[in-house]
Image (cartoon, rainbow, N blue to C red):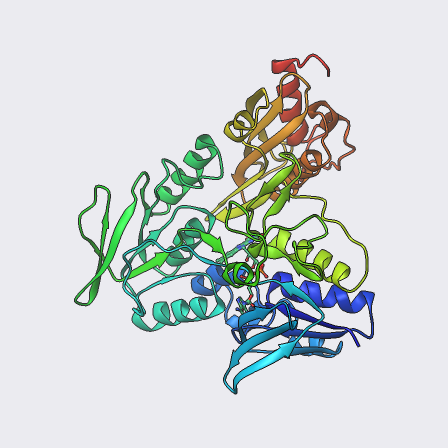
Length: 453
Ligand SMILES: Cc1cc2nc3c(=O)[nH]c(=O)nc-3n(C[C@H](O)[C@H](O)[C@H](O)COP(=O)(O)OP(=O)(O)OC[C@H]3O[C@@H](n4cnc5c(N)ncnc54)[C@H](O)[C@@H]3O)c2cc1C
């Protein structure tokens, strides 16, 4: 019987195993994971820390029983330490000792790990990244039992801003440090400024353009030093300075590694070694607009790629359509979404790009509760092609649904003009006859008048 082994029991790994089972009912499938948490949502960790999700068990995407009842064998606390391609066997460390596990086909779904700034105290419960379920449980316990008065959040990306929000909800005074000149560096500076204003309005002290040099223990407190700040003392430091692919095992096994440090795969999620696939945060992702690999570690992508890797590993046929970098984040009362390319990214990629920004109400203002959405559209002024968008607005104002519509346009290479033809829903409490997405597209077309539209 053919034996498929999946290394990793999170988003990509479990999707791969489930997809493989759908293709081949008789395949022997085994998932090995180094921790104890099969198929939990690390995306939910900020809400565990904030107390909005009352226990880590609630973060399960699905139960272990559901997975194991499909005849998928799961080995928790099994860390793969070596891959021998000649004998097709994995070296594994587990509480039972070392073992060798054979495979015919293999899926790497080893994810990513936090990219830590250099000087951080090791094994100090008051300073840790927020990446694994264990990180989230430990941070929740720390917040509940020690009731920290103040905290530094180091990193101003989407996880940093989610953590600032979570800690404020727990009554903690938060100072956020970000190396970039604005918060949410994957967004434009204009959108970042709106999010920064929301953080400040909710009491977060935002320090942009500040690289943290060191976090040191100072008696009962931690002392933070950054570019211009000397020794800010806090009770807790959360490290959210980004991730890097967990690809060392793959590198040692002889898999090709790209310039991003992630595993190189084709769009069927095949690596350069026959019968070995990879998916999720450990791989380079095909970017559908740039038409080249990029590193876009997101849960949505990990799920899709895992499914494709598992389908193909089991003998089926599936192909990754590509990502366009769609993401959305909620910060206090705001949501910020982006998809496609920012103007800076588009120009760097050689597109003659221009941005138009509009403000439009989320629904007819005569119906109570209407809220303004700030929308930026980036398009190619020669061809009229839609390249990307950002939306910032109240989190109850349909930011995610609208950024998702833009995402479809970006992924399918629409002209910005085509958004005006989309047959969208409308009722006054929820929208307008011309949806804000279309108001923005119309403004872009009128102001840029691309020759081919
Ligand atoms: C706080 C936080 C919030 C996030 N929020 C969002 C969000 O809102 N939206 C979004 O799209 N994405 C979000 N993400 C990103 C998303 O969670 C990841 O992209 C996704 O989890 C990646 O899944 P993965 O399966 O590739 O890797 P991971 O989830 O990192 O899992 C890796 C797996 O590999 C196992 N493993 C690694 N090495 C070995 C080894 N040597 N032997 C055995 N097992 C091994 C681990 O035990 C684990 O099971 C968030 C991430 C974090 C940390």
